[in-house]
Length: 148
Image 1 (cartoon, helix red, strand yellow):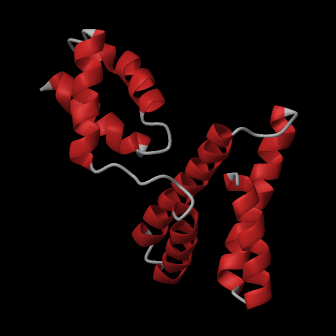
Image 2 (cartoon, one colour):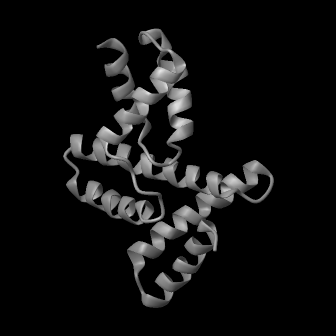
């Protein structure tokens, strides 16, 4: 069963079980996936579905950061609850030390020497870690490795 189909089935189950918070989050995910399918002019591949879910998770992380900075704990908690639902469909996220090991491998393979090579390294690294690492964390690690 594909990820998109699993989300659809979980949405129906959440509706039947009366789980409003989960149902609402899954409804948002289904809408995002439908919009992505319209843009792609066809059905989405599993990689595309994972990419859409990762984008949705990133949006929630950014919102949490903004709400925390603005002292809106109530809104941040709502975003955290949505993020937890979204992350349950994403592959396991790599720990920073695992990301660093992959970054070192890509840097060595690309022959990167300095800050000017960050873009080249990030393109390859994010392709290799698709959906398993936050781009901001990976970027910080790559910049640290290439400038240090």
